[in-house]
Length: 453
Image (spheres, rainbow, N blue to C red):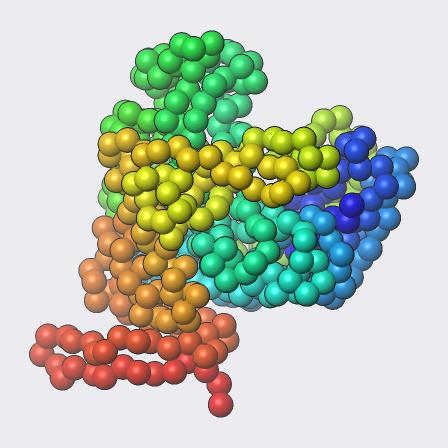
């Protein structure tokens, strides 16, 4: 087996996923390829992985390169953990909306930050798929790069490569619920469905007993509520619990960020990315994190990570099927979400690849809230596929938090500023709007081609 990591300088994923490989008896004669365009990060990560391989006693071979095509050649499993573009663009995803009075928290999944993050990242992911089609056409692409739903909707419409989007929101939430219920998480029975970062637990049981009444009781306790205040707030109103953190959900819903007192009441910080994604802060934290891992590289890690990477890799290698949660095009898997959106559902994996399970409709208001996000993400993905800024504008206009936070013309001006910031990534894009009407002025014809002469 050959495993290729694109964006291998990621200190959040590469080290723990490689450790999963080294702990798995099935993978005793394996090649691990590390690829990153940041030579400094790649050098440190290659030292970390090299030490881990030496300590493992396996026959694992290590390939280190800045050449994407060579890293992908003959790969069986490809993992993408990357972000594209300049650090100043990432900071602008936060700073520009903030300058118009809009609040975001993470800005990597939805809204103006999430959409433009997607425009930059998915271009690189599409390039990975093109290379795979030529040098590793039978491999699987496991994507950890956000915005997950937007990225996967684009990839699965534009490439023949078998791909899936992976997140740990379901696994971590199951463990969180196990601790709350004081039940081993392996004994919980559950069905989850939605879009990435907004996947609802439509069923939570233990030995056939519905655990939702107990969860509602627990949520009334202040010491429990404060653990995940936004998630428990939404549970009270929509009747279902969801994956991901309160920090994320604050910006996925229209009820919170544009009220001055709500972030304080719920203990969630907003617009933190304005300071976090500067060259000094982000660069220092990343290199410090890698240096810390390098110092600890010889310390054994006694157990596998919670990620679905290893179960998928094992099932693809052995043919023994496994069920995980992943992100694929909907196509009827969730009946009340758009077919052209990427959804998070149970997926069986074997040598044939990914076999998703339909979960039906998400009930009630939970389904309606998720549909708003799914249409927003699907529209953004369509805009990226067609390279049309009209659809990007409309996607951001339809984002729940954006439309609750700003007037429509302020949203237009904000998007204009984000377009200007992201000009290097918009070569060949168009804006297909027929005209822009503003009260008291003459309509302006708009047929501009975004590119470089």
